[in-house]
Image (cartoon, rainbow, N blue to C red; front, side, top):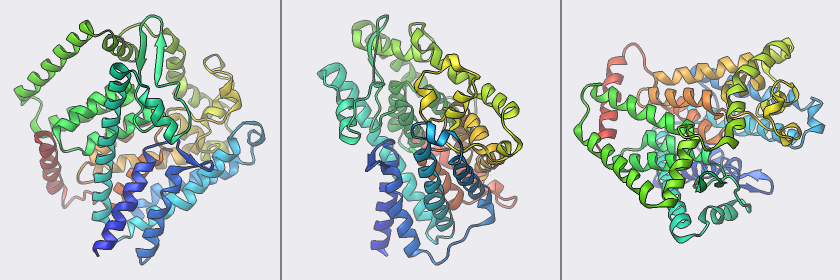
Length: 438
């Protein structure tokens, strides 16, 4: 039994760890897909049956619709014209049919759901802490030692330099967007948000917030703030604010202001962060990108209503191709660069991605799953907030990391019923209290 437990923990940790370093590949295949296989094989060898509960039909249906739409998209004229179109659709179809759906069925019928759930939470917290440490090593090495630790990490995992990590603007100077064990600061934000959600240590929670602020991920900063505020109000009420939090906040503000005055590199870093949040007005070069993001939802609705035929409105044009669709719909050409017309890509907004990629059926099924998270006993409402807010501001519907979290919690967590609602409310409040006090 001990041997089996260790194997299970190792498989889950490898799965979560390699999903957290998005973009790393072996022989052109993503590591996060390869490292799902040990967990799937282990579950196959230890499970007694392969089936799925009725409560998981919406999630399974969402994956099936995505796979069907992806297969259909391979017959589109774009498949032979757009760079990466065919491989993007083909690999994602395989991921849905060979990895996501079997994993959903196997975990939902496993007799070791509690171990799977706890191991997943422990792995998420540990990997979040690892990324936090890497973030601060990146900051120290760049501003104090003068060594580009970010690029060293990226060359080890990806064999490339990361042009997005270092930004040089004449009005501000050079500032760094740390990526952790990633090539994308925004994806680092997702890892830190989930780690923050399950973290029980207050110091690590503060470090999580500091790390996501350094990464300058606007959506993750907002979501982490919402989680913290909701968790505190849920536990203590809006009037019972403890004085120590004011003391900590005041000390942090004083330290930041002093550092901005005394250290030029810190000044440029914080100015860059405020510019990302549009509190300062120094980053005019990002205006086009920001406007493009703001137009994703209205332009996607326009294409969905007026350029899709009835079949496409039902099942979509294929997952992870929404950017290609919007580029060739000629509705926002002025905000796109030339590469976006010739390369397969998806928009960084789940609402747009779901409408265009999965159609109205996939859109409804996905949000049924998200709203169902609210009924999970512990962490349910906060998980709902994370997935719902990210669905507006980013695209995690195709993220292997986020989808694994969704599969595990939908399969393993017990849902609220009318009989145990009071018990659940008490358990959730107690859990939130422990998170804040530790």
